[in-house]
Length: 140
Image (tube, rainbow, N blue to C red):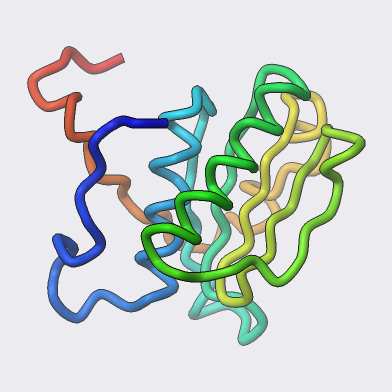
């Protein structure tokens, strides 16, 4: 994607690296037509991971595009590499493991079935910044 994205240095001072990665991943998921994109803050609930990024894709191909673009942008913008991934070939639930951040990309049926949003309903939801080109656009 070639959309303009604020550079990581444009984030508020003191914002931690895991949150920066989670927000960047969520932004890329939205830019690649992911829907129902959420960032869950799990820091108060588990020591295992800080954030979940959860998004829904409309097809296996589109979920692959989201996963590939997230990996590319995180590497370019944050010089971070994923530690592992699962589900890419099956394309129903793709998990990208960045250590403190886990990105979950679901097809609609898998998202409803596994219901991570419900399972982690005690987690705080992180507000997503408006995309650069969306300022002044009507809400959807």
